[in-house]
Amino acid sequence: MLILLRGFENILTFVKIVRDPAEIPLDGPRPRALVPTMGFLHEGHIELIRRAVAGSAETVVSIFVNPLQFGAGEDYDTYPRDLERDAALAEEAGADWIFHPDPERMYPPGYATSVRVAGPLTERWEGERRPGHFDGVATVVTKLFGLVRPDRAYFGEKDYQQLQVVRRFTEDLNLGVEIVPVPTIREPDGLARSSRNVYLTPELRPRANVLYRALRAVREAAAGGASPEQARVMGEKVLAEVPEFEPEYLAVVHPETLEPLQEWVPGARGIVAGRFPAVRLIDNMEVWIP
Ligand code: AMP
Image 1: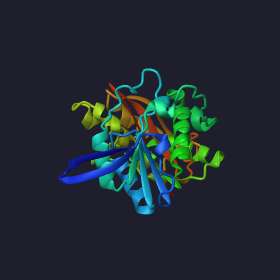
Image 2 (image 1 turned 45 degrees about the horizontal axis):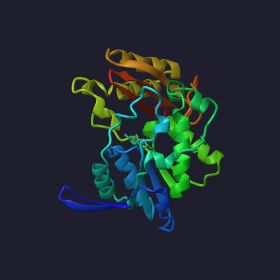
Image 3 (image 1 turned 90 degrees about the vertical axis):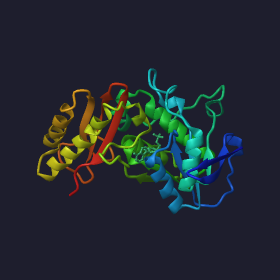
Image 4 (image 1 turned 135 degrees about the horizontal axis):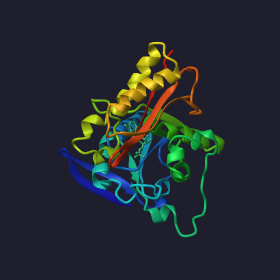
């Protein structure tokens, strides 16, 4: 176990960092909340931690850049990391301790097991573009649940398909963890907060809210009486205004199955993904509120 000590905004912070899975304390106060992250914390993560702290007796933040959920050619090696800063921010938000294992401890020699959610939920959208990604997520989250034994776990709606995948395997495998969704935290111009936003150049940054603006256009068209397809086309027009952005998909989907909608259903979700040079961004929004 490591105790990290540093000054942060003139407050001296101490936070316990558990690196060895064998040292995870299981006898703490209950209910215990887990906030799984890959670190480089921002306001989105902090909101998850604050909500966990408000609703639980003990809050554990995991910081683990999970190699299994990165594909070949993705940014595993360059993914931003800053444990000291993360520790101070998590502590300030009220986390009780941090779990920060080494990849070799999570996947030791001989490791051979994977959790896979099958069917339309993982075949489309992110699952189609990032083969193996959701297997990696499902596997690491299942392991984190087994190690930390939380009563509940907090996940951002920012990664909406991931949230549905986590709900699915948690129920299917009877893991006994309550999954708590948290709305997306955004920059003032609408850009969803993300650790990967640091890859945006100063020239691109002002245009990066195009995903948000497209989703707003879908929602406004829906409110004005458009069909899901008509609303989707309105969103595509907004995406086309920013030539540096290469859209991968913009769809109007069912909030649980993520299947494209012909007719509106309550909670219908707009989902969007695409690339600026050097950074891939995703976003989503509830677009039909009856
Ligand atoms: P990550 O570190 O990117 O794996 O994210 C860890 C958790 O934080 C996931 O449940 C994300 O959905 C959530 N999260 C990331 N960005 C945001 C955001 N802008 N608003 C709310 N939750 C977020």
